[in-house]
Image (cartoon, rainbow, N blue to C red):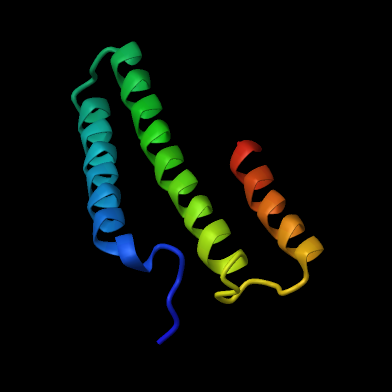
Length: 94
């Protein structure tokens, strides 16, 4: 079995994602109930922040495990930098 940078914290990661999933369902209910727009937007921003935190944790695990420990990422340091910066760029391009 291949281990990933997040394998050790997988249970915590899944709990966080379940919380985010619940937040998204809550936003859907808010829309269904015609809640105030700013309140809905506030909750959307909270979900984004929670997902950003998850993503940063995954990036940290990737850098420490997959790149530094050669756990499945490219062996060439230049390719490692390109891969990591590509992931960061995709995160920031929303």
